Image (cartoon, rainbow, N blue to C red; front, side, top):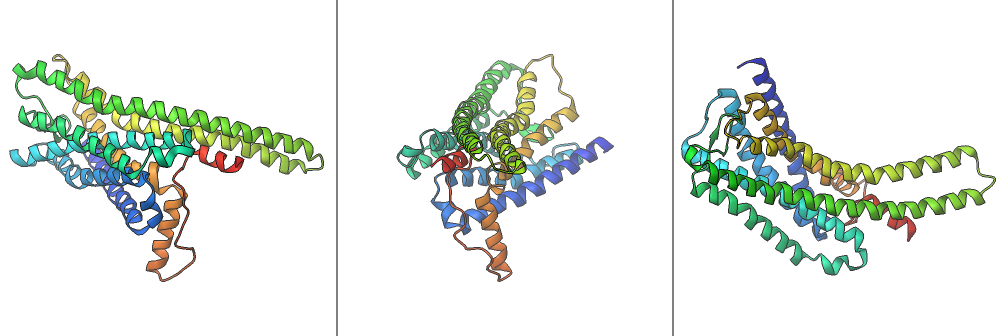
Length: 339
């Protein structure tokens, strides 16, 4: 194995370890905290973390073996099963992220009717559709024997073996990525841009009130006034930053792989081996980043983890109830400030 292969293998090991630990922590928080279990969004987060954990345990190790051995590491039947799971789990995680964005949109844009518009029953229905949708395509690919070891990506995944099936496989691949990646991306952009619009509106109201207050307080110290203005600026940037992370991480992690899979449908295109592995590692990195993007960096999850550590160490520094909020966007902050 050359140096590039060793570096790619080390990168995948790092992603695997981070993904395993972080997704386990999210599931641990869900089991430990009653407040998190009460939130409807918890259904989507658990499904997302569960799929990421399965992808980490069942798919990443076999891709790692494929990189190390530079050949198919598994038998035919096992490889088909792993490829089936990868197609299913990847699609399911994308749709789970779309469901999370819908939950945020309803919570922020329709806060007064959130409890009636997004109930546990509605969340279960959304997850039921996600599972049905995600199972359909791998079942079709398994029926047509389009799941096999692909040396370009060093993994068991969608793969065309017979050129006579190229037209049908091309249609299948385009429809699959359109109804998983593109559909999820459109939903993410629509919902989060609506959330950002509302957040900016409420933050603008806070800015106006703040400026009116500063004008009235003629004796206020210049340093205090400057801190207020700096906080105004940070508040405006915080909402944009969060939305950019939600959408940007989705595009950066999944985009290169999806584009590569579509380009390779052209019969005259040959994908570089190292680029194939890199694009594959990027999709796996989404499983490692999702717990931080959606859960672990939130104040509520931090307090739950601190409570767990304190219980293990037999300390009681924080109340076990923790922070309770089903809305974790900048708009929530602005709404609380204006109420």
